[in-house]
Image (tube, helix red, strand yellow):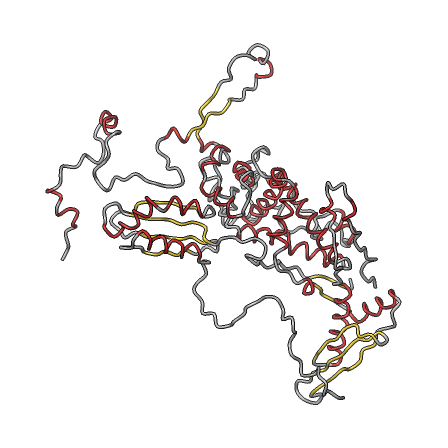
Length: 137
Length: 413
C-alpha cells in the first residue's frame, strides 16, 4: 500500500455549529424554617417558574434541606458540580447566582493570559528565516 | 459544651404539634387533609413527579392470551381483559412516562429540537436492544436508519468537497466524523447519562442498556475478530463491511439484544437512532441541518490523516500519469550544514512549477517532506462550488444542479 491513513476523532467546537449549554441540571435546596433562606424561598415562589421557562435546556429540581443554609448546586455536562450557598441573599441575588451557574462552563477557573487560543493554524504561516529576499546559496 | 438546639428550647411555648406519624390506620384517613405543622414534615416540590403511593407504580396493559386466535370469533365483541402490571416488571420505561420526564424535555431543548418531535420517540431512542429485546420498544430499527443517513451525508460531503481523496483517507475521515468513537463522544457532549440498570421504573431520560458486570468479558460480537481472509482488499472493505473500512462487518443492532454491552456501544446507537427518528418525524431538510450543526461543524484537519510510505515514488508516478514533467528535488536554502542541527529547505519541481516544499534536518528528509507536501496539495484539491446530491432531493428544477468533479483516483504503484 503506497498510502495508509491515521484514524482520529474530529474535535468538538461548541458554538461553531450548534451550541449546547454546558449546565445540565440545577438543584435548589431551601429550608422553610431558617431565616437565611428567606430570599431563596421568595425566588422559588416568584421567579423560578419564569427562570425555568426561559431555560428549558436545564433540568431543575427543588428539594428541602431542613435546618441548613440554602444552596444552588449545578451539574455540568463534563461531569463537574458547582455549588453556591445563597444564605441571606435576596430574591434578586439568588437569581444572579443561578444565572452565574447557568452560564458557567463547568471547567475549573483558569487564568487566561494569551489573547487568542485557536485550533486552527495561523493564516500567515510561521515565520521562516530561509524565505526572504536576502537568501543566497 | 453541648448546645441546646433552638428549635427545642422554645418548644414548650409552642402549641402542641400534631403527631408526626399516624398511630393507627384509622388516623391516616383523619390526617390526610390536615396540614402538618411540624417543619420537618414538608411537601416535596420537584419537577420530577415524586412517587406518592404504590398505585403509581402500576400500569394497565392488555393481557395477551394464547388462545385468543381460537376464541376470537366467540368473544370478539367482549371487552378485553386488562391486568395491572408493576412497572418494575417492564424491561424499559413505558412510553407514557416520557411526557413527565424533566430530563427528556431538557434534552430536547438542549439539542434545539422542534416541539413537534415527540418525547416518546426521544425516549425510545434511548433504549438499547440489550435493555429491551422487543423491537417495537428499542432503538434498533431507528439506529439502522440513522447509521445509513449518517454514512450518506458524510460520504457525499467528503466526496464532493474533496474529489481526489484516496479511499483509505475517506475511510479515516468518515471514522473521524461519524465513527463509533466519534458518536460516543457526541453523546457524552450532549449530556447523556446512563441508567445504572434498565427497567420500567427508571427515568426515561437516561440511557438504558444492560451493563457489563465488572470482571466480565466484552461480548464476542464486539470483540476484535480475525479478518475473513488474509488479504482483505479495498473492494471488500467498500462492499462487504462498514463505511469505515474495517476488516469485518460490525454486529447488527438486532443481534445485540439480551447481551451486556459497553456504554460506548449504547451511546452510539442512541445518536444513530436519534438521526433516524428525526428523519422520520421532521423530514430530511431538518436532519441535514442538524447533521451540519452537530457533526460537520466539528474540527477535522484532513491533511493530518495522510500516512505516506514512499511519497517520492508516488509523486513520480502521479506526474507520469498526469503527463507532467518528472519531479526534480532542488535545494532552496540551507543553514548549518556542518553543525549539529542543520536545516535544509527543498522544493520539488516539475519543469518550472514548484509542486511542494519541505524543510528537514537532512537532505533526504527534506526531499521526502517536499514530495509529501506535493502529494497532499494534489489530493486535497477542493472545488469552489459544490452541490451535494442530497440538496437536490425532491427538487423538480434541475437548473441549480452543478455536476460534481469525479477524479480518476489515487496513484497506484
